[in-house]
Image (cartoon, rainbow, N blue to C red):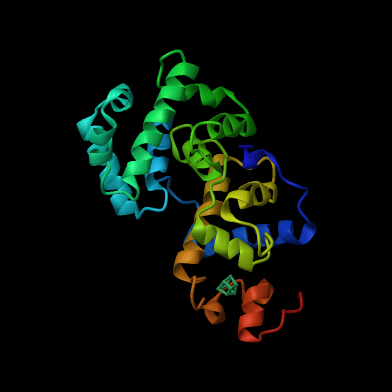
Length: 247
Ligand code: SF4
């Protein structure tokens, strides 16, 4: 499967300006800079990201805690009976799929890294290369690769896109209406200034995600109190409000 994070056409000016405006307003609204919520090593963050796929945070956290309590090392997780791993991660969704996937990832990493289950080597790679390297692991897509690089102690500027972030980006016109979450990673990342550091990329992701959680709801977005209404095509269509003339 090709790594979606490496392919992006040049962004148009509207989308680029709109992304920076959203960044400025939403970061101010939600109080950036945001504190990183994780200090996990990249190997742990990768497994945590796999567990979190389509799972509530509390449940994936519990699955991770149970897994690491039952098997204190990644080598033990790799070599355990798959049913035992599945039982340990039972609080997350689809443990029957995630248990064999985690073990396949660990086996593949063991082969690639000469037996060392440690992803610190990614720190020396350019971000696109590190993303592609991760995305050739079994079942690892752009969201998981970005989470591993950004949320872990590596703190590399790769941007994950969750469903809230994706919805807000689509309604603001940063991506087209038919672009799915996976494909949106490369397009949305291409809108950001190339020199942005991990904190700026993290703030951008968190601000758009918070906005999806607190205002731009899946059903009935609260457009009338939204700080983006004057520039949001979707909100203006929904409310009948016209675009505001620039000052
Ligand atoms: S104006 Fe409405 S649709 Fe647009 S970002 Fe705000 S809440 Fe979402």
